[in-house]
Image (tube, rainbow, N blue to C red; front, side, top):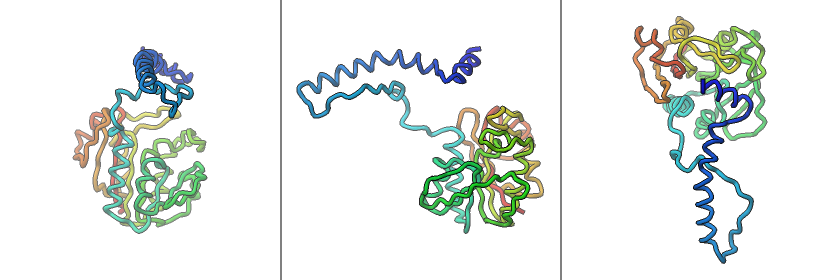
Length: 259
């Protein structure tokens, strides 16, 4: 019940949990301010400006080292570095995460339905709808990544056309664009199969493996579980596949070779 109430508040732009936390944290905030004021007494080098309370960082960890994006971005960037393809393109992955990782050491071309107006070293951008039936880039690259993206295709979240089979059309065009023997790095949510409109789809593992059949060899499979922990090089056996590796909303990470 509390989760539903919180969801309604968040939809209205109100994070009541953060609000309660902020109120509690004002006690130490003003205590710290008083201490700093006393230390700066008779010193005018750094006068106080407007107050800008940041009340939720004091007891946090030094950074986020868990979750879908952290693990997939780092893992796949490492694999691309090791494999050193001739031409790598990315389909709609996160620019300020994975794409930036790749651009740190090589050129990368990005396809996305959304515009990108910045000029960034090592990143070439092409605005394109990867789900369109008239897609014509055949055997375009020997390496393609598509991380945490296919689950959105066709749901309209990013101003893309509503298409119940958007993920199928997108995967078909990615297959066309990849050279035979080329690598596809793909990640997507795994768990009980469903659409959480308009945020995303969640795929069960059996369904994904059927999509790859006769098209790709699965070189490796890793996954991020519901706690946000990475399991590298997981064994693909029927029992684990049928249980979606115990995930309700996990992240499956595939390295595939086009047959």
